[in-house]
Length: 169
Image (cartoon, rainbow, N blue to C red):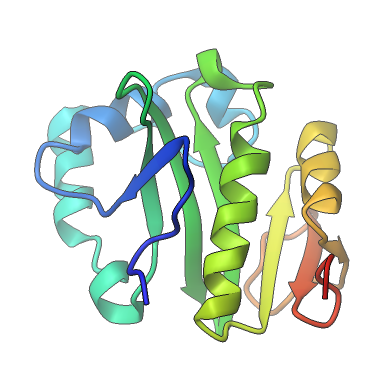
């Protein structure tokens, strides 16, 4: 079984030393942070330290993979799964220049297919209440509105995907 999702257009990879510069750039854009609730990193060093402490892949066998486009090697951002508070959630964070190009939909389908093959039966997702693009994306991926789980972001829209609800089941 593959350690990462597969898709003909994208490469998914775990984070490694040097990736702090990518995360710093991604989180430095106020257009991106408007929808995340996160703060920017102070500098590349802080982002690199975050990468060094990120053990999600070794702890759970999945995480937020960096996503590059195979065609030209462009790093689009990250997409993937996170386990927190007993739940698994799906998230995306793209550089603004790659928004509205279908990357989240295509990588999301690949991640959900991978999750199904890993016997992950239920995945949650949340988005800022004003982010209509995220709502449409999640509904298109087969997520349905749900109650927030304990520890979820208060006031955010919550969705659930399960193998019972998944399209094509």
